[in-house]
Picture (cartoon, rainbow, N blue to C red):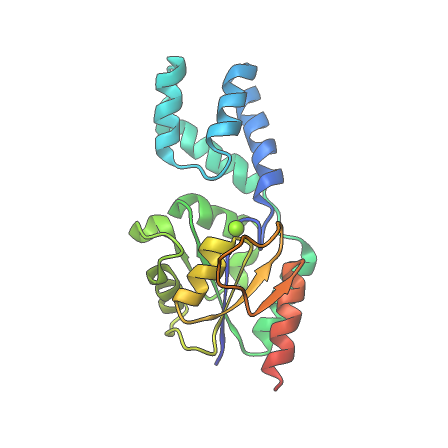
Amino acid sequence: MRLALFDLDGTLVDRTAAFADAIAVLSHDHGYGPEIEQWLLSELADRAERHDFVRLRKAFNLDEDPDHLWRVYIDRMASAVTCRPAVLEALSRLKETGWRIGVATNGASDIQRAKVRATGLADLIDGIAASGDIDVRKPDPRLFELAAARCGTQLTPSDWMCGDNPETDVVGGHKAGLRVIWVRDRPWPDGLTTPHHTVDDVTQAVEYLLTHSAE
Ligand SMILES: [Mg+2]
């Protein structure tokens, strides 16, 4: 049985769009002005974790409990994030064809799982490894290995990784001994090991895998 691992943010789900919405709602609900909203938009732009809200409280002398704010943020992100129906449908077909599907994501355990549940991806995937689970981040091969283990299997050279980040997903996938599909969202950086295949959308990556599985 073949295994396909996917990155989450920017590959299966659109974190960027959800993020702006989530920060706007969180700021509005707490009566935060533009200064705090801007701080959140810039400090949490790449990723967010509980500790960011400890820093927020310090930076602006806020009363709110960081744990409370972190839970609110997770809740808002889970409400705002979406996985397009075409992506869900493509993954369903991959699953029906007998592929195991895993997620290997850099991010805090609780928020990444909340997103997977809220988008309906949880019903389609066999396992998820978040960097927050073991404090190991892509491109470290151990996160890919954990994702495979969570899918009840081990990595083999015929398995695939699919993601949008050249360093964490593509170089990381290579390091883990996987074949790699890059979901292109920027020019390819010079000097990095190139992907086996490049697509503009994750649904095309699934199409490619479906074609391969028939061979
Ligand atoms: Mg990504």
